[in-house]
Length: 228
Image 1 (cartoon, rainbow, N blue to C red):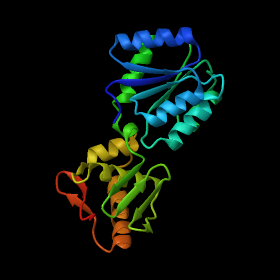
Image 2: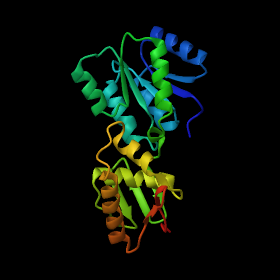
Image 3: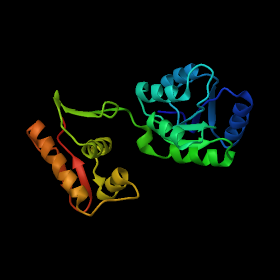
């Protein structure tokens, strides 16, 4: 688990870094600092942080490559906020395409930077292990695959997200409203969409395992059982 209120700042401009560190530490954050991309990658892979602040213009490695390396190699997902002077839409698209969770352009208000760090640190889906294992069920969110024992479970993207949410909550149920919010956010689909995806997920789990694993809990939501 990450240290409480911990941030890794990857920034080669020492004046900017000092300003950011002083401001965030004044708000109670614990800030580690790396002045190069390679050192940033090393620190990110050897410790857990609530948020990583990543500049793109680094002396040794482009920040996009740093972001991708951390997202691909870290055992646990860590939220990355790109902080850069690159403000074109194409640059933002590349940033999110390489795994950024948020993007802030320079110059910025330090108060906004702090607010974005707070928001990212509160999003539990950004702090999960990439590999989820419970009994015979295994979900690898980095590879975007799921297995029952040694059998690959053929799932859609939404099916995989649903299964990961249910597996994280196991052995407890997940409410319908929480699943809808996590999968579709502020733009939920028609009322029967979740029910339809749950039905498909239940059937495919029964097919690969030979038993029922996904149950409907009346007036609550859905729950995985019998994974051992």
